[in-house]
Figure 1 (cartoon, rainbow, N blue to C red):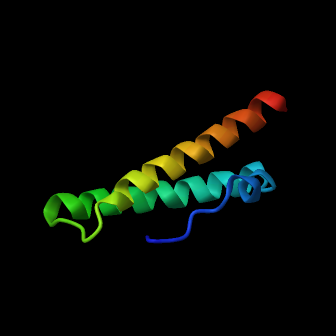
Figure 2 (spheres, one colour):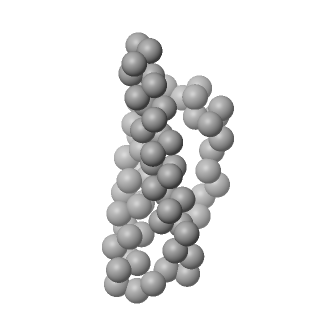
Length: 69
């Protein structure tokens, strides 16, 4: 899960379907990590915050594309 976060410019060129796929993937990863964190602490709990922020970033881009379309 410790993947490098894409830059905003890199995400803007993706299609809506690709953004939805990435969003689903990140949400599943976040769920697994948060569940694992409840049972036993993660080595780096900042991963949870970073995942939440990345999910929010993708949702924002999806909403912007929806409004402009």
